[in-house]
Length: 274
Image (cartoon, rainbow, N blue to C red; front, side):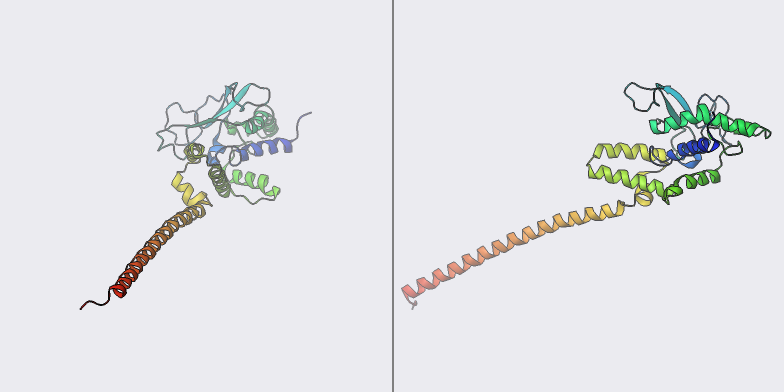
């Protein structure tokens, strides 16, 4: 028995949302909707692409490393994302964004690629002839065409909002950045935090300065905390110096008083001079 259209759509929508929050540094929705199937050999689907031989933003099946946890259950293979078109592609001199997807996304995508997508397009093809418009795209809409930006927003809201969470993609990026930065700071994982910043900012098309300014909701608070700690330390040094100065003044006053008392005592013994 074939799976229902509802189940197929739920799996596809969950896979799409996983690219934006939870399992990888949040991708731009424009990258998610432009992904093409593993094995696609046609031209890049993005208008205006001037990269010679470009096959677009896509997924590729690769052999799973024996030390990797990114393979789907029992398949011995993993999915690699390759995105030559991303926000920083011009500044990165066409260096593609590429990494192995975690198993949570891979298992959903494997079901979508091997089962769900074909059933969905077969249903749409009957009497409509619209399946060809997908042109190798990984994700498609209900009528068999490519997913647009507005459709991606609708998919996100319908998948996330029923869980009782109001979390627009922009806020999801803030939650991601703030959460991981806070966890890294709490664990004092300096080297790990630096590696996270380097990879995460590239994947999200940002910079560390942009994270500070826009996405990291706890950044300003942590900076103030640092300032307070510095003030606490500085205040301690000042108070220590003041205490030392007071002790020196007391010692000097005591020495002066002792000398004065000694002089007065000597004068009383010897009597006044003529």
